[in-house]
Amino acid sequence: MPALRKPALERYLKTHFGPETRLLSYGIIGKESSKGTQKRYGYGTPVKLTFRIGRRIQSAVLETMKPGPFGHEHMADRAQAMLWDYDSYGRLPRHVKALDVGAFDARQTLFSVAKACEYFVLNEWTDGASYHADLEHLMKGGALRKLDRQRTIALARYLALIHAKKRRDADLYKRRLRELIGHGECIMGLTDSYPKRCGFITGELLRTVEDACNRWRWRLRDKANRLAQVHGDFHPYNVLFRTGTDFAVLDRSRGEWGEPADDITAMTINYLLNSLISRGKLQGPFEVLFRSFWDTYVEASHDKEVMETAAPFFAFRGLVVASPLWYPNLSIEVRRCLFRFIENVLDVPRFEPERVNEYCGV
Image (cartoon, rainbow, N blue to C red; front, side, top):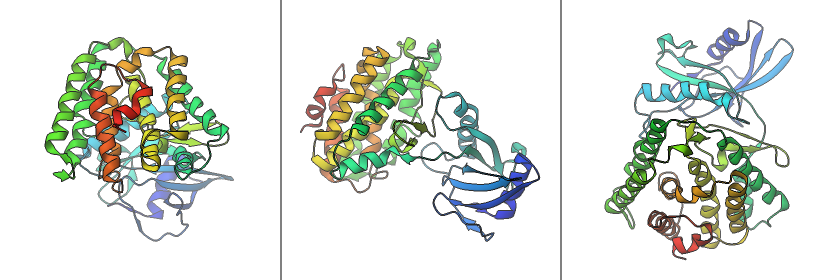
């Protein structure tokens, strides 16, 4: 684990922002300190830096990535992710900007990348509250507000806007489908991370899901005309709302270009998850938001074909939220509903939002 020390951080900031730069505080977001004592953080924990340049005070976020089983085992894996972040963040509307990319050496000095042992990316700081807080409010029984509806519509229209930018590259579309199945952060990385047995979740069940997803890959691989600009990890924790419907997005992942269904399923699976936890089925405010998101997106994008490409992406996102590693506190019945949803969505040729509870078997 790297030891982030104030002198090393300040030296790095001086090289990037100029000799007048002074580090005022640093630490895990929400726990910053002005002290210069050694502080240890695991790779992957974002650290907020607040510093003064002359008379101007500003903040930035230092992000790293820890070694792990999701395709992050090698330093080169983690370096690839950091370099891609720096290169791509600024090209997506509303995304926070990456200010620099660099590395730590063996002594935890931050510097340019030639002698790198591990990489980091420095992003601009943006205020806002995670969209997950809105969903948690509803999950705890809060009333559906007009603002909840407006924000859902804003998010769906945002996706329609970014997805309108297309690219002609059949090989890249096939690669992105291939990565959906085999990337360490995607389907096979997730199935490998499940314990040997977790109640009803067996290796045979996970293999069946993998097989069905690969059949979908072959079904979709010639739809290269659908290759579009994507976020790649569009879930509630990566959306920060400021006031009203004004928001910023964080941490786009894995590729600038991909299948639009990836972004839509990444967000809407969370309406389903929270409703299953709180109500045992998709109903009430979460059903309203789920249906509104799909209706708004299809109307704004004119992309009705997305219903025919969503299945393997819902399987991917379903494996995430059903995972005992990522969501250890789910009841066994919620996990059963999620796996029924995965299996049934993979078994029909077209996803229909109005049939979600049928897919879940509730």
